[in-house]
Amino acid sequence: MDVVLLISTLTEVPKPVDVLLECKRIPKPGGRIVVSEEMFAPKYVPVSVLDAWARAACLTRVEHNGNAWVYFCHYTP
Image (tube, rainbow, N blue to C red; front, side, top):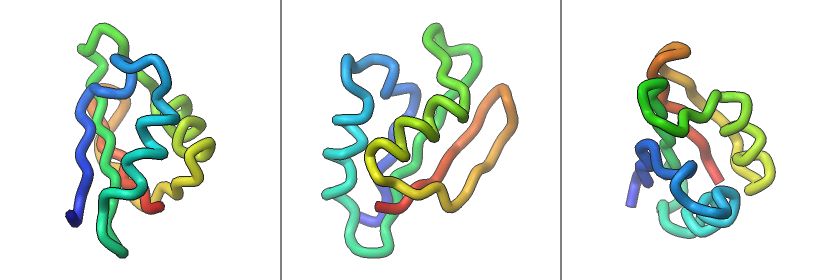
């Protein structure tokens, strides 16, 4: 896989860092984990919270697209 895409997913699981840790093993070398959130989602996660979860899973953010309303953050393992 080149990309693992999570759209408004991490707030629906009890341990989002564990999900990110599991996602790390899926992409092939050079692949990415992309997380998207939209402010209209009932459990919206700001980028700062997502980045903290990603750091806890030893992921590095390499790209950010969007704004405060809708965003995509790209991480590499």
